[in-house]
Amino acid sequence: MLPADLIRQVEKIAGLENVFTDEANRLCYATDSSLLSQINNWVPDLVVRVTNTEQVSNILKLANQHRVPVIPRGAGTGQCCGAVACRGGIVMDLSSMNRILNLDLENLQVVVQPGIVHADLNKALAAHGFFFPPDPGSTKMCTLGGMVVFNSSGQRSVKYGTTKQYILGLEVVLPSGEVIVTGGARSRALKSVAGYDLTSLFTGSEGTLGIVTRIRLKVLPIPEKRGLVVAFFDKLEASGQAVIQVFRRRLLPSAIEIMDRTAMKAATMYKPELELPPAEAMLLFEVDGSPAEVAYQAQNIAAICQQFANQVEWTDDPKRLIELWTARSVVGAAAGRVKPGATRVYIGEDICVPVIRVPEALRRIQELSEQYNIPIVTYGHIGDGNLHAAPVINTYDSAEIEKVKQLGDAVHRMALEMEGTTTGEHGVGLTRAGYMEEELGPALQVMRQIKRLLDPLNILNPGKMALDEN
Image 1: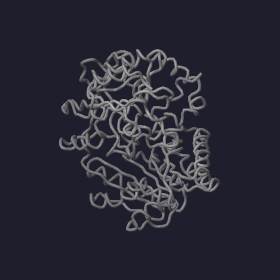
Image 2 (image 1 turned 30 degrees about the vertical axis):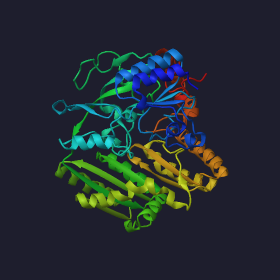
Image 3 (image 1 turned 90 degrees about the vertical axis):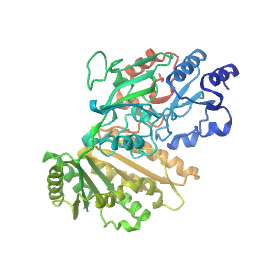
Image 4 (image 1 turned 120 degrees about the horizontal axis):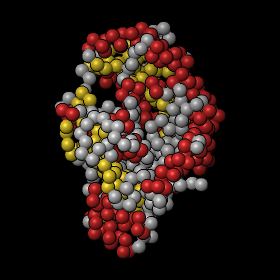
């Protein structure tokens, strides 16, 4: 329980209508999308919805004074248990800070608040012929603040990179309540090497070092044309060889997506009209640019795939593009269809391995599925080695929950054995904190020193990323 005086002061700062102490409202903030949070159901002591930087600063000053944890939260779509109150305290909801503050398209940049939804930003930019390239699957729900602090990416990262490549500067409130601006206090430049790169320090910090209240982003003109090559393979290994050969030919698709046979099965169960042919793997290569560039890349990629695949198609027709992308776009929602009465859970779902070892990883995931007798729908971004393994279980069966926890551990450890990482884009949070010693080595101690320097009382998102462990 929080002191009554502290709650009254928070109410004075944010307004009574933005402070929630009743259990029903607090329960809404007890989980994110991760299985770990749903098992534990960590209910915060207090929820406060903030609307400006001054409120964030004043609440952090109070929390620091009373040594109360503060957990920043956007839309709650995270999948690593990163925005839940595992040690109680205050959940700070930033989703109402959702405005575009400045469109400076002549300088290829915008300034936004952290609560703006990704798809809403791109809709606004599209009206002017621009876009923000990173494209997570949760585009219609996730917020830019979450994308920044988890360094999100998505399908087009193979060509356009991750969120960090587009962050020019941040307004950040430190645990003490002090407000700083990174990337230059008044800068509108597209690059700078003045001082330490503090922007990168806070990017990917998962709300453990400061709370982001304003974001200056680089944006790009929308490509004139898009094309898509779809190929079906009898062998997983053949799909991997096709990708390697595409890179060796110096071709750079904007996205390269893979679906294994379980993912294809899930998609066709969800939308039977897709009529996908029997295959071990399906690849989708998206290309973009001028019409001539799109045609050149698509034709060459199709020719390469024909050496390895049993069926290949390419198109630059916008209607056909949507039809061909449908299988990939529905697979996340469709995963649960492969087992009646079951649910897709998020655990071990975000590994990343060297590109050349993706087929091996897919094969081993299928073997783990058989070993634990748990269906796994696997898909992902083969262009950068990022795979999403989606176990499907009965979440009311305690025995299945214990088995899937073991399965998730096996998937994570497999990724490390294969010279990969336990998380390519979803983050560490609590779900992957136990692997950080092995994955990061002595660098983890440096991260802990930075955490202690900026947050000596450990009030910001404590317990996450293995930062406050001995």
